[in-house]
Amino acid sequence: MTNKITTILFDLDGTLIDTNELIITTYLHTLEKYYPNKYKREDVLPFLGPTLHEAFGSIDPDLVEEMIFEYRAFNIANHDELVREFAGVLETIQILKGKGYKLGVVTTKRHDVTMKGLRLMNLEEFFKVVITYDHVSKTKPDPEPIIRALEQLDSTPEETMMVGDNYHDILAGKNAGTVTAGCAWSIKGREYIAKYEPDYILENMVDLLTILGE
Image (cartoon, rainbow, N blue to C red; front, side, top):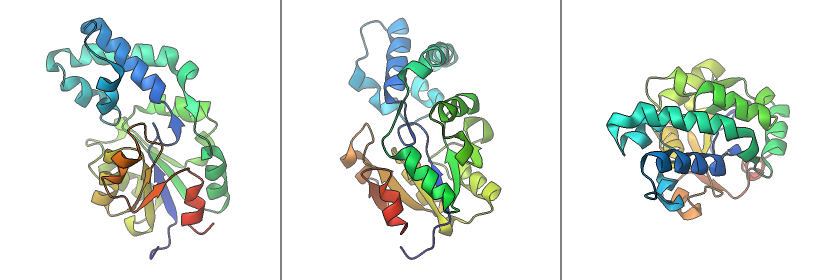
């Protein structure tokens, strides 16, 4: 690595916390209500990553707000039961924070649900900055969320790494000029994330420590 990394930004869902089952189950519940027996598990995988407006808008623009309301109600009701932790995440974040790295979260999720997930996994205290759907006019892969996070952290793209499990994360990092790291534990598979050519691919979050020389 040519640049000294001082700042690390993380996606939330599928990167820091395992919300895959929650999101898939919520999409299937919502779509079953409006389109009985039409959608299967594999059909909703492409919806992991984009915003709810993008996902539901691709199905029926006229029902977007109604489906989002249904989605959010079910998601909140089942959140704590279905969210799981990823091995190595908490330990890695603790070490990075202890060594003085500036840490932030950049997600397309709403702020209230983002904080709910971080608190559930005991991660809230480690992140000085959390940029969510509510804070930006353009979401990933646009660089705006990353740039906003860096402004608040007083960091530059050159000293920053963006870590994520979806193409939105990798492209947002590239668009903002950061180093990028893809998560091989993406529910879409290692080959999926490799297609977007991140600078690094993490097999486990602990790999970050090796890459950073820690």
